[in-house]
Image (cartoon, rainbow, N blue to C red; front, side):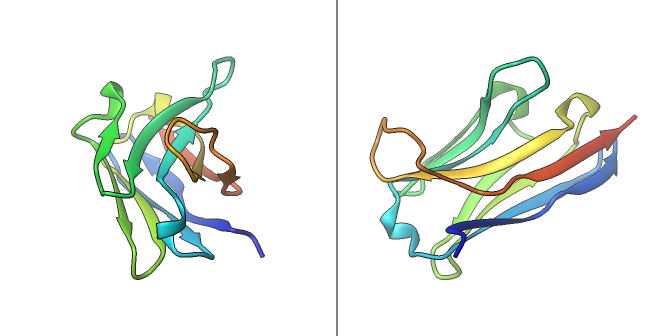
Length: 118
């Protein structure tokens, strides 16, 4: 069984919105923190948003006030609401989780394509 299974994504025009979801096979209490990542072509992987077990969240500067990360413990889901999307944000997006603070992210979703056209 895939521990993290992603859904959502797709294609939108500039300024459009998409919502990504990540379904967990185990309780979210098993993970200290979860996050969303992307890797633009020719660049290193970058974190997009992060949320810890207490619900405290952060987003990278370039998506502040446009992207919002959230989790639903009862439904065992992690989500990323993306608004006002830009073409340069076209990428494959991945959800991930880790057991401990400052540890590697040990669990990854299969990836979801996001395409933003001009």
